[in-house]
Each structure stands twice: as C-alpha cells, then as structure tokens.
Image 1 (cartoon, rainbow, N blue to C red):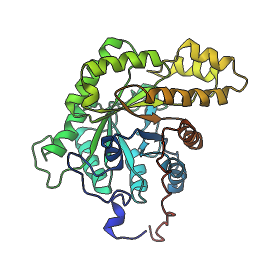
Image 2 (cartoon, helix red, strand yellow; image 1 turned 60 degrees about the vertical axis):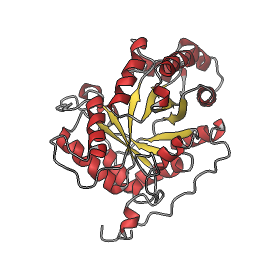
Image 3 (spheres, rainbow, N blue to C red; image 1 turned 30 degrees about the horizontal axis):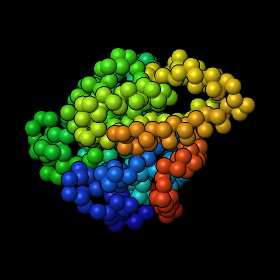
Image 4 (cartoon, rainbow, N blue to C red; image 1 turned 45 degrees about the vertical axis):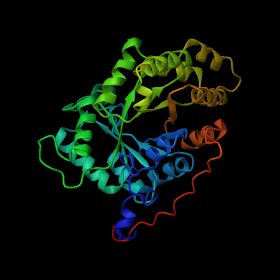
Length: 338
C-alpha cells in the first residue's frame, strides 16, 4: 500500500465539501442532488483477516452509495466499526461508521470521531446501542455515558463549533455527515415522529430506519413527518431486507427488539412454494413502493452476511435507474512489512 497521504483519505471522494455540505462524502452529494440513495450494511467478520472485510464490501460497493460498518450490533463482538472503516477507506469505499454509546465513554468516542475523519470517514451514524444483556457476553459492563441524542450533539459541536465537550479547541474539525436511527414501527407510534424531531434538532442530517415490513405504518409515520417539516430538514432512508422463511420471520418478530412483521407478510411466505425467493420478491416490492412515498430519500438494505443477495435485490428493484454500477476499486495490496 502506498504511503502517499492521498491514498489514506477516501480516494474515491477527492473533492472538498461542496457549498452547503458538511462533508466531502459521496452519500451526502447523492442525497443533496436529489437522487434516490442506497446504503447497505456490512456485518463485520469474526476474524482478524482484512480480506474477510474486503470480500464482503466488494459486492456491496458496486450498488451502494455508502456501506455501513456495524458497531457490535446486538451487543455481540465482531471486528470493530472503526477497524472496518480503516480498511475500507484506504481503498476508496464510501462508508458509514456506526458508533454505539454502549461500549465507550465520551473521551473515547470523541477521539474515535477525530480518528475516523482523519481516515476519510465522511458519515457517522449515532446509536445508543443494544443493552449488553442482548448479546452473548451479558457480564460485560455497559457504559452509556452518552445516548444517541447527546452523541449527535457532541459530534455537531465538534464539527460546527470546533471544540470538544470540555471546551478545548479542535484545530481541524471533523468534516462529517451526521446520521441517526429511527423506528417508526413500535409503540407509541404517535411519539415516533416527535422523537425523530429531537434527533434532527440535535444534529441528525440523515436517518436510517429499522426494517420496514408494514407500508401502512410507514405511510402514517411519513405523513406526520411531513406535517412537522422534518423531511425538509433531514434525509430519510428506510430500512428493508429479505425474509428467508415464515419460520424465520416469526422468530425475528418474537426475539429481535423493534421488529414489526404483519401477519399478512408471514402468511404470504407460508403460502409460497419457495419461501426464500418470495422473501426476496417481497423486499423488491417494498423498495419500489417506498420510493414512491413523498419525503423518503433512499433505502438502507440489510441482510445478515448475504451481500450477494443484497446486490441482487438492489439491482432487480430498478432503484438505481440509469445510474451505472460503480466500478470495483483496484485490488488491495497488503504491505509486506505491515
């Protein structure tokens, strides 16, 4: 790998921030241009081999405007989000670094934000994080020094006011596009748009939602979002993903916090000759319907360690329109003395 600094800061996005932009990243440019954006989730490997991350990202890079690197989702240990971002930015991938408040205090988080921005990370998604009891190491000590809203405020202050929470000045602030998560599908439903408003007020510029399987609830949520004018203050990307089977859908509904799957969806899968194919087709239909809803700026596609399926769904949905599939970055060459 060349030591030239130009190769250490997202060579795929060499431009300075455009007027009115917070970052120089591809995702923000796509959203502000009015194109329907596509992001997808890379689930980090249980491995220290960088090729395991590159192989998964390679498939997604052709069809996505940015790749999310999850941060110990479900409170389970995997390769870290900042580690994934370090690997991917050096070869030109656009990434969304997720930060969970569960595992680090404000000192560590602010340091991670500066380090990520120095590596070329242009997008940061702020999450409170699942409780440690949800994962496979329930004896871990949770931190939660910040929550998602105070984390949004922290990064906004670092970027816009050029200072740490202590008041100490930052010489070069992080140029980042700040995001948050939302779940329109869990009670109290009337509160969800208001909660989104609090995140936007704290600094959220883009939103990625939990899985959507209920279009009626999504339309209800978006109607209220438009009434509040939030669609004009942030970019909303709706989460989607394929269901492999009716049995799997029932398990998700019962065991994964925040997942809402209507009975009609499970019945459709139950009645299908090939349930996995039906789940794929349902996801494609949802994407196409979501695109027609006013105020929605894109989709966020999730399928646990099924990157090829994600690429197939995005392509088959037609949401890329006339946009060409992105070329794959050059082959990664590991330094012999790394």
